[in-house]
Image (tube, rainbow, N blue to C red; front, side):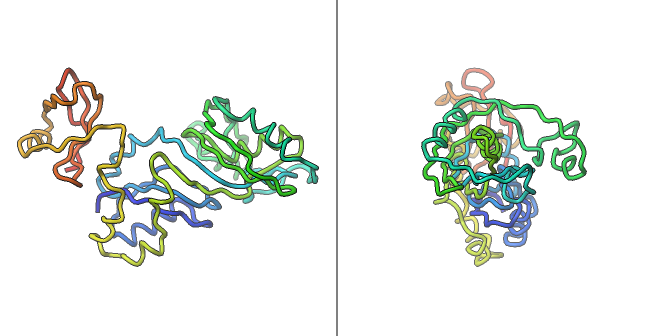
Length: 292
């Protein structure tokens, strides 16, 4: 089975757990997710299946949108509600205006320190493995872009927020640093991903819905994101039989209508995404990923 399925990940499962469930449901062994969601988080989790896993390289820069809550009063070692409390607990008397004013400094291009319990690698070892072993975790700040960060409401010690953040950014680091800024400690108490790139909750399917079609490849393929809508930044062309044959043999192809496009999607039919090709000169394109 080849395609891209968007799952509405439930709380309490890792992204790898969702992959394991999809393998059982679809019978497809080759599955990979686009952007890890922590176990406590819910929402949009796009997964590539079959030959479409070879397209993962083209999705790495996608921005992501979230809603969630931040709990003030104490920090945790993981920067979220699943971690152990660190430091003293307090009950700050915050106002909505104070929290909103502090949130402003986290918008736009910033340098962000990743959480010690994260997948960031230190000399080839994921940081969370070092942290769990009680070893020092020496991470470096990374440039990210917080396109939007709105504090919607404040209910005593918990703020509701909406955020849009660049690839590689950690929402729980923003929550942690916001607490530091306000002098009271804070951690991410809930998180829901509402969008990842072009994929939204409207495109997502629950695991229960997918299980109801277990083993029915045709039904599951119809639940996949339409291949024509994938990677919208790339123009699409439907190739004739001769062109498909040349691509299958690894030959360059002439696509005169796309002289200005650096990369194009090539289809063998309405839904059959056959290849991704990169322009080498003029209207000449070299297939770089062949799915057919």
